Image 1 (cartoon, rainbow, N blue to C red):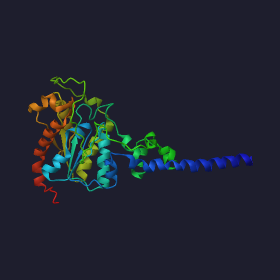
Image 2 (image 1 turned 90 degrees about the vertical axis):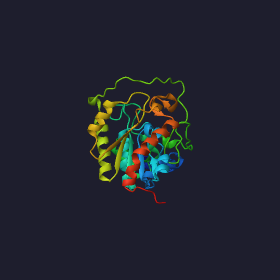
Image 3 (image 1 turned 135 degrees about the horizontal axis):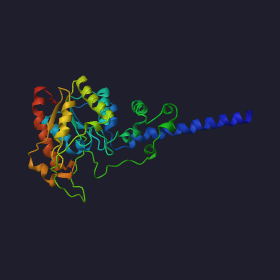
Image 4 (image 1 turned 180 degrees about the vertical axis):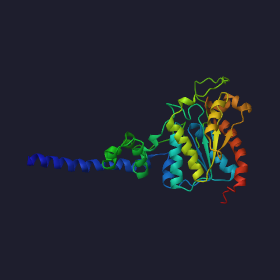
Length: 310
């Protein structure tokens, strides 16, 4: 019995020591990432006047550096392709927790799945895994069920396969991030025929997910509570604008929230030369759409004296 207990003790001590060695993978993970935007947010290094949030429509279609140069306000794009409104709400909450709240937030909407089920838009846990060494990120994953309470005691419970990949990450041709966070595309998607769709859109309110709906309402409340002027953006698609979706968002929008609609009469948005695919602009189209946004924001910036004096 004594020998058995001794073996158990030796095994436990050995496991404890070896298990803790895995912390090196968690510790070095942030330094291997090339997209450091979320880390900058939680380290308090994202103090900007204007922030763009959204999925790939925000990342591809809105050029933050163009806004900054035109309006002379510090601007940054925190949009993540493949992310949903729940992730956007997390980003905004993180932003105002660790940084001076921006004066303006632009939220790029996904008309096909902003509040509806979607396999392509998710909560981007892959952006949290490399930052597991930060307690804030760790607790967020626990609260969302991505980690259990054992992760407070065992390093292995915090390890994701991404942490074990110690290669330095590189940008792909599609996901290169510009200096102000935007990710415009200069080429067109291969083997994709463009036919402008003129069909009438519908919108099924009953199909909305409560998690997404709650996140959208919380997103608006965060803006109001932190004195942020929120603009909801309707980006061009290579099809007729979804008026039914716009009406639904209007029903859910707080009185102080504004919206910016692309110029539906502009022939550019019916020309496939300005699109990467049916749902995303190429850089030449993004420049045009961003200029439309700038035109809407000029009076807001001037009225509220949001000017970078440097």
